[in-house]
Image (cartoon, one colour):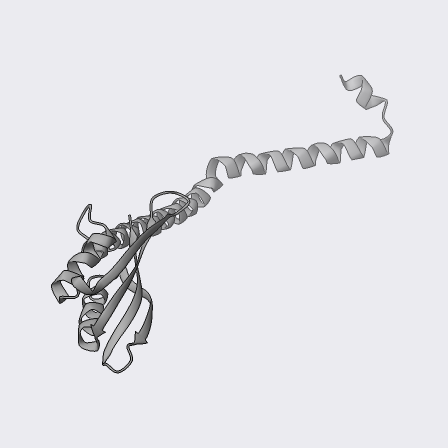
Length: 173
């Protein structure tokens, strides 16, 4: 093995010796860092991961609380009750059920199928403004997820009565 080294010129021997010394120095440094230096790096990495885990746990708790609030906020509609049935009940409570000309329900599901938007368009005829405001107040105060999307009012000539077309929507889970 030494025969090839003895055949080299002095310059080549110096280059080989320098390369060997460099390999030995870098190898010993890597060995020392692997044995003793990584504990500090690992400790810092562990602290960072613990902080990330704590942050994820806080976010998970907030998400669960928000999800519960959303479910609780939809309590305007009883479990299994539709927006149509809810509006029919409110109209009966306010005393305008007999003045409802029509109610057209529709529903659109989200892409993932977990959430749907239910919309009911209803027309109410010969309606005094006081009954309209009472109805709208009951609908709007029912919960965060039931809201009036739009309303179109037409005044009946020579009277203080209105014809209203109301669009009401809710999000159901």
